[in-house]
Amino acid sequence: MTQSKPKRNSVSVSKRICFTAVFAALTCACTFVAVPLPIGYFNLGDIFVLLSAWLLPAFLGGLAAGLGAAIADLIMGYALYAPATFLIKFAVGLAAFYLYRVFKKLISKNPLDFLPRAFASILAEAVMVLGYFFFESVCLGYGLGAAASLIGNTLQAVCGVIGSVAIVSALYPIPSVRNLFRF
Image 1 (cartoon, helix red, strand yellow):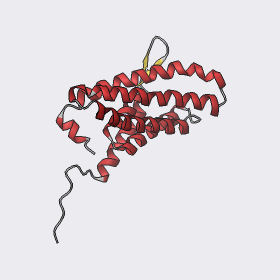
Image 2 (tube, one colour):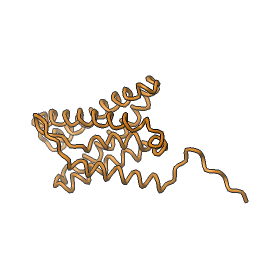
Image 3 (tube, rainbow, N blue to C red):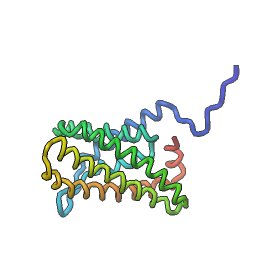
Image 4 (cartoon, helix red, strand yellow):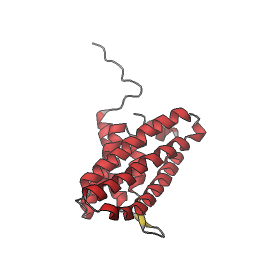
C-alpha cells in the first residue's frame, strides 16, 4: 500500500488549532496593554484581531479574534459586552480576510501589498465601530448616548489599522514567516 504525499500547502489540524489558540491568546493579552492618547487610550488587541485575519484561514482568524477579545472582556469585568464583542470581532476578522482578498486582486503588485491590507482593515474596523454603536444604542438602550463611544472606538480602529499594517508589512516579506502562515 502506498502512502500519498501530503499536498504542498497542506497544514495539519494541530497546527491550525495551535495558531488559532496563539492568536486568541495574543488578542486577549494585548487587549490589556493600554496606550494613552490625547483623548482616552487604545489597546493593542485590535492589532492582533487584524493580524489573525490575515495570517490564519478566514473562519479560524475570526474565531481567534472573537474568542480572544471576548475572553478579555470577561476577565476585565465587562461580561455584558462579551457576547457582542465575540460577534463583532469575529465579523471584523472575516471582513478583514475577505476584503484583503478582494483588494489584493485589484492591487496585485507585491511592493504595494500594504495598500490592500490598509483598505481592508479600514473597512473591517468600520464594522467594529458600527457594531459597538449598534449594540450600545439598540441592545443596551443607550440611544444617542452611544454616540459618545464612536470617538473612542474610531481612535481604537485607527491605531489597530496602523499597527497591524505596519507589523504585517515588516514581517510578511520574510520568506520563513510567510511560509509559516501558508494555509
